[in-house]
Image 1 (cartoon, rainbow, N blue to C red):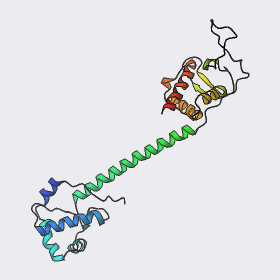
Image 2: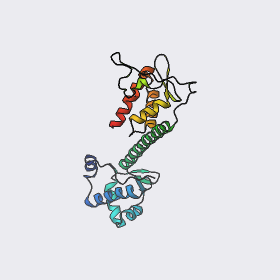
Image 3: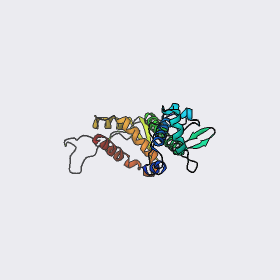
Amino acid sequence: MNRSVAFQFYPDKWQSHTRRLTDSAYRVYHELLCWMWQQASDQCSIEASHEAVSCAVCMPIQYVKDAFADIQNAYAPLLRTDAGRWVSNGLRKEVEKQTARRAQCQKAADAHHKAADARKKAADAPIEHNTPSPSPTPLRTTISETESPSSETHPPVQDELPKTSRVIGAFPCDGNPTEWKYTQDYHDYLCKMYQTLDVMAEVKKARIWIDANMEKRKTAKGMKRFLANWMNRAVNK
């Protein structure tokens, strides 16, 4: 059994129960309770014989008999006799309480490990792959009304990325369309912008979050902003 090394001590109950004992009875009773907790198989009883008690507390048998006349006073015995054993009700209740507490802690630990395993499996699962689009569309460039075609070119912004490329994942969306495709081109773009991050791992985490919070799904138009904000938070952790 999973034996605890200590039990709860209640000074008020102890004093009210032992105040009437002689010095010898007090000593025997104290030693006997300690032996029960440390050595008895049930941590709360001993064979109902003076010989067994004498052996347990290492005291002369006559000394134990005289002490038990006080301990097992006919009007207020401190130990209950049950199936040929002397039982301490206080220790029995303590055993039950500690057993229940250990079971509760074990249940909570099992639930925690189960949830952790589920999160790990979800994080390791591949993102759903869809059928690639048939053909890519040309890169759209945006020129300000005040700029001429010969103006200095600028790095592409997110809206200037290819609209179609090899699809490597998908996110459920709110509204129409109901799905936003995560492409290889956009993945490469994020990898370039966030070189210190494991971008694919963060994308998987974002997908798991979306699946767990369906009421917070983004529109297809808002997915790039959502992923950009997600990556920024990951960088700042």
